[in-house]
Amino acid sequence: ETGINAEYGGLKFFHFDMQGKQTKLYEGVVHIKKCLTQDQQLELLKDVMFCTRDYSPTQARNDKSKFTKILSVDLTKNQKSMPQTFLLFSNVAIKLAHKACDHIPEIYSPMYCTSFVYSQVDGKLHGHCDKILGWVVLFSLGCNANFWIQGPEMPKKKYIVFESGDALVFNGGTEYNIFHGIDSIQPNTCPPYIPEQHRQSRISVQFRETLRNDNISKNPIPKTTNKVVRSAVVVIPPSDLWKPIQDIRRQYDKAYDRWMPHINLLYPFVPDSKFNDAYEKISTVVGEPFELVLDRFGFFQHGYSSFTMYLDPNDESTSSLKSLQRSLEDLFPFCSDLSSLSKEGFKPHLTVGQFASKEQTTEFKSKFEKDFPRISFIVNEIHLISRKRSKPFKIRKTVSLAKQGKFQNPKINPTLDFISSENKLSELPDEQVVLS
Image 1 (cartoon, helix red, strand yellow):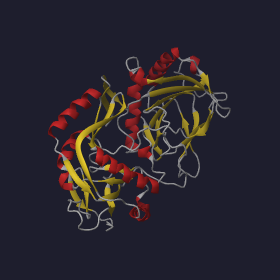
Image 2 (cartoon, rainbow, N blue to C red):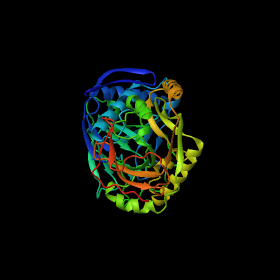
Image 3 (cartoon, rainbow, N blue to C red):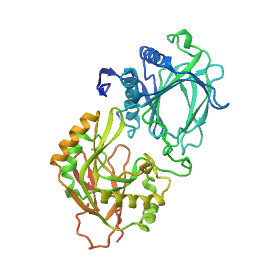
Image 4 (cartoon, rainbow, N blue to C red):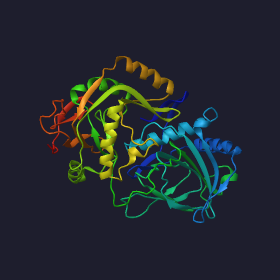
């Protein structure tokens, strides 16, 4: 795969040849060398400078950082005037990063763009964690930067030379807790093709998929706390009810081959090496079984060209799921990601697909609702699942909410696991524990 054909927010892009060498620096952090060609760098620089015409520059707010902020724009309010390079180049970087780190999304909808200028004389950025939810795409233009990152499990900083045309993709939220900064700018390293007026500095162009979120955790995750995006605590419908769900997901859900139909309760979660301890904790506070009804659809809007459609549990089911999720989060308070995404808190849902426009989303929502059968089952167990590298998720442990024989609800066979690429169940060698 060497290029992309893209259509986002009504904008169509030609086949774009991708280049660059990806290096995974840490879980959720990818450095892409030479992501943009010389011509593409100049095009991006030109568009950034054009957008700065109505912005009043500001200086760093503390003495530990030295930079000038030259641009800050909410792209959702300026869709018609947004340069196409912003959308195209950020998607090129995110797609390349996805190849090196498979839980980084393949499609990106930038909602916010900022740009900063660092002088080659004294430019620097104090180490920090952004504490802003979502994925960040960062481009560097001009002089080289002595850039570093440090994740929770890294014993020391990882330094990179951030050159003109390079990109860095990482998650700015506290769930990843990626600290990063710039120690200095390397003098006289600006490529000769950069215009003369910009050769004494390094220009950072930054895209975000969310705006600053005041509801994120006020406290960074301690470095001793380890959670990963390859494990979760979930509710899974009985396998004999999967067909209508999978018929939709097979066509529209990019995670079809990785996830079984599920409702996340905690995600990210502790690594599966800690599942024995997690199981013991969860088994002490599990609640009563309850009926879960799926008979309607809803959707999330992540940006102007990114929508996720889901099966929406009815009101009574939602209340029960929220109560169960709160009990679990009380046990694992550092796994509060799902309750921190919005002011409304945890929103239980079963994802069925992703769409590129509101019109397309509402059209398919109406179509699905006409033919989709009412699904109802008793939630009498929850599952600890995990995956290895690019493999599908597997059920590792199961905690039962009911006494044996109390409910006759169809279950997932505890010795089986989902291999979605074949839409079959296959043997799972890992231990399955059911608490009765």
